[in-house]
Image (cartoon, rainbow, N blue to C red; front, top):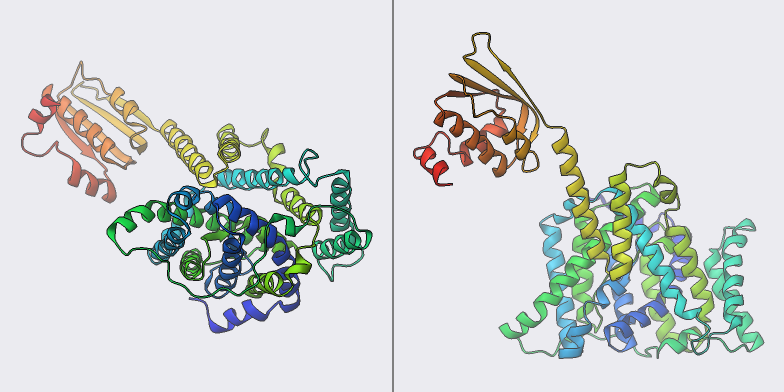
Length: 498
């Protein structure tokens, strides 16, 4: 549990940096929130209200200061069918339920399972997201699209020049904010015809209000929204926890995973009651925040509050921000997010690690689904790890001078991946009077290994040998006593039947 002084420090320890970074993030959130609303098939205000609500609430209850959460594409794509078949009200109900599921995950401390996500999967996740962020900007650079001209390219290039060169003059003001202000003033002054934020969709002109989703409170409704809510909860937590790890590394600090799960749940639950869609942490916006100097909770609060002020209070002015300015910022994020060293490391790192990283990248980019890509990466990591551990398994054997006792010495981890080698090491054709199986340098892990040990013991007994198992550690002994059958009545009959 965080102390009151630390919590206060997270709010007010970096006021200037957090406020300026939050303003930059707020401006970048507007077109994305509108775009995600369009993906989900709802009015732009649904995504904008969600981004405001989630960013502000997560600032208070989240576990990772400086991380930005809002409406995202990862959750928006999961809602398309629900909105199409049942309408907005069911989406709001699913958002509330997803939030409650996330709160439950936090209370059950399920965030600890992130420790099983390998570094290779993390690198693949980051690289894939960088690629997706860049690909998302291509429609704004496609000359075949309406409103996109060579002037667009020139403005994007100018924006990138400001982003990378302005810090050489001063770092007092974030260069992305300077880019937005300068390009907006130039476009307005010159009267150039380029795509603007206003072209993405109409901005809301009223504050959000509390409302209860207008749906029948029946079991049938629960059956309809539950699959979508569960998918949103899982994907949202996965992306949030992955982003949390990245921000931890960027800031060289540690944060509370379980509190982040609870915070995401609270934010989504409340958002569903003000007409907003579900969301989660955003790696792109979080990196913008960190690179712009944001470190504390105030940055997320500022991003959400300024977003609402901009779209409701001065929406007409915000609508005139040229899209090339925001495209330049997102390209900067893409370049900064990608782990360029991972390309060089492909020839240095072990082949399984490189395969896991590339598989994660390929799956995410192909499916545009971060959850599927991470799942593929984790499964491959598990398979490669199991294969590596299985290769470290050894069995040696020795026969006594009188030929009456054969000893088998087991070394390594006995689990489902090594049971085949275990079974193949025994000679059941010529069995001595006594067989000793020494497992003092081994560990028995699962039911497959227990069954393999049972079969070996029973086969030797069937051949007339006396069998003794030596050196079993406490954990292995507990498992064998619970699951093993070789010392239980009818064991031989069960073996013959098997």
